[in-house]
Length: 167
Image 1 (tube, rainbow, N blue to C red):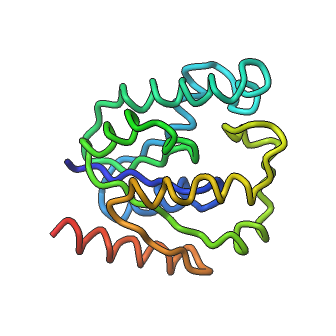
Image 2 (cartoon, rainbow, N blue to C red):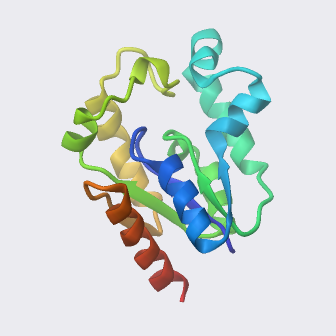
């Protein structure tokens, strides 16, 4: 159990923080959104447009449950928590860490939801997605880190929590 999986809302900083955390801990970095795009040979938004958000969720589950990794930090897509199989598999690899960002902070970020390939019904607002997913992130998380205003502060909090939990 040497991997750490990051979950959280789109725009929470999972990929950015994941790369930095991997560098600091001497681990490799894996982004499941990129693996999904590689498998589908297209971007997430195109998958949603052509096949629908349910298909993207199914593909995400297949990609995550097929991971056979060691000594890494994994940044998941925001919808990974819709799959108990995916989360269960991630937990076999190591702890699941939820990067909690307050809704008001996410709302201020320029997320470009229409271009991000959000795996949810069309017409959902950011608030709708947040309200639906936040309880799932909390339920499945082994560690919850509340994001600060800075990447550096959040990274320091993640490192502190991870070191405390893993020791």
